[in-house]
Amino acid sequence: MKVVLDGVVGDPRGNQREFSIFSPATRSAEYINITTTIEPSDSPYKNKLNSLKPGDQATVIGPLGKFTLNGLNDDAEVVLIAGGIGITPFRSIILTELASGSSRRITLIYSARTP
Figure: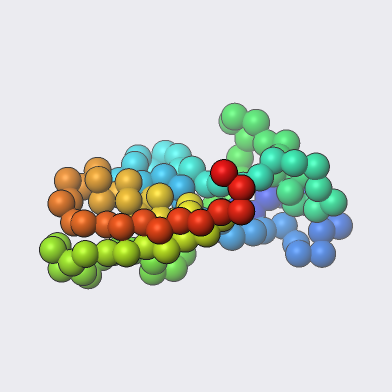
């Protein structure tokens, strides 16, 4: 999904970025979770994002893409391979499967530089 922030000035990449959804697709549409690092940055966009507080608003476009398990047979086994922050869409997929009551076997292989 894309997150567009008003008031971002001077960022060469503009006022929008794409993020992976971290929450299950079965969650209420009132809110969704994304993952990002919160640290000082030279990016006006990241600094604006890091300064958001509960109740602040942003424009959200999406979700985008077709990275789902829809269309697979219910008994199809799935292997997911992720590294680093790339785990976020896999978490959403696994939580969605669990919430739906699926008995599908899912194997997650994950690697990161630091624990």
